[in-house]
Image 1 (tube, one colour):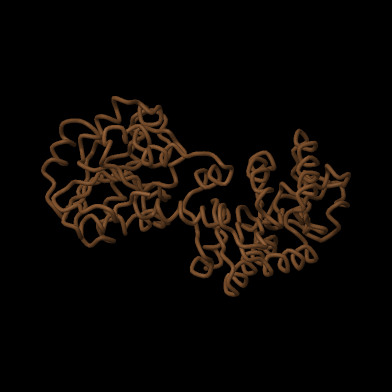
Image 2: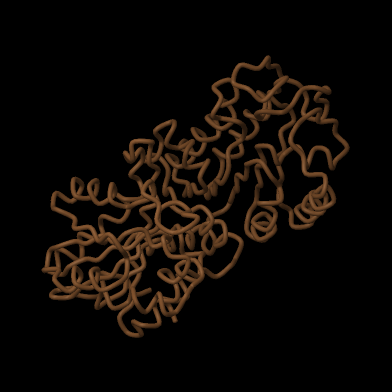
Length: 396
């Protein structure tokens, strides 16, 4: 794997694809700079070598060209504070004025381009657009793991214009190495904790994992599709009726492969989807009409904790319930702390996917698990066994 550590950037201009898709509030203040800070080691490596940096990223999903609320200008200001140097900003990502800014960049300086997605050519993977971007640097670096599963102009197509000068950034390399640890060299027992709302979004992940894992812990709304498939009564709980047969097939396949599946025997239930709903607990297979499962129950929590704490490798993707509501956070919170305890005993733990990461951050546990991935869709596709266009483009 060729990374920025394999090259000296002295006198060179690095064109780095980063993922600065940070959340902004109504006053365009960055509310979470995790993704920005994740790219800092790569930027600092280039600057320390005596090179200069041109950064390109997307922000949000502009519908029809430039939108002021999706400008990367606030990110440039924020990045200036983090790096303690003035980050120059280009009001366009291509064109003669942007080229002039890039050409006049001195060693030790940083330039951030305006939102790539202001051009539809970015998401279309347009070759001409990629070529226009490529003239802005001498060396191409992809450090945007969060968009590596997209065959966009700046993440995959552009690499062809740097046949011998394309490298992974330090974040990208770390992401790939950590996923490989879990997927190729896991220590047993290997437990996958899979939660979230829908079976449909996780089914291919589960199928790919069944050959590798010892335990599959299922939580979140998707659990109720499995329970209904087995003949349970789930009241008004979230369910995907089109996936009942698929759920049964997964259960049968797991049995054939000696994978132990844990489904919640009991659930915390509510009479409406609200933080202030009336709530109770009951057997998951006997949820009354008018009530819905919102979290795993007390008995399920204890069984899940025991399984997780006795694991040597843990992959966690998706919450156990509606942890955003305090009344229904117990399952996710206890699972998170169980992952921490297992890690403290020597297990390797990889946490990935938006809601899992949000849970880790909510309970301030990021530094207490082995690795927290910055990628949502990219991580999931890797776990599914797919190749990522942004990775293939650098490797080929």
